Image (cartoon, rainbow, N blue to C red; front, top):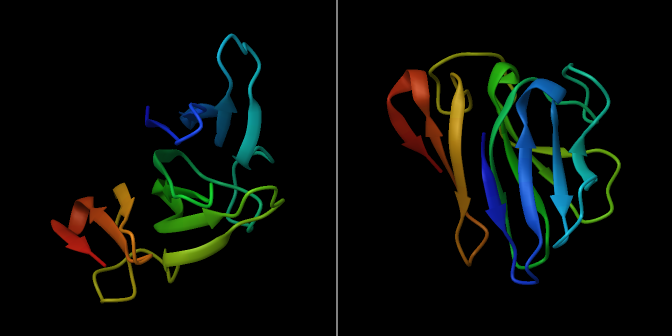
Length: 123
């Protein structure tokens, strides 16, 4: 299960089996869905076994979408995400991912992905 915290102290938790990411305030037991939450699938409002999460300064949420072989970005308040890496089926070309796991974004907005089955870091 992936988790991270933003600069406001909100905790973001990947709910792999629920195919969603939730944001929690301190003492919050329910959380708010900030990515996915519409069942398992490959639409832009769905995830399929998300693994890791990263939150940038603008509170956009980046999620490694494991079985969809992509990384999704969900801007704050969005009802669907956009594909920022992969998403061109499973594979090993430069535009494909093969079970992405870790994801991080630097201060310039460059996305780095641990592309698990291809044994590489992609940017």
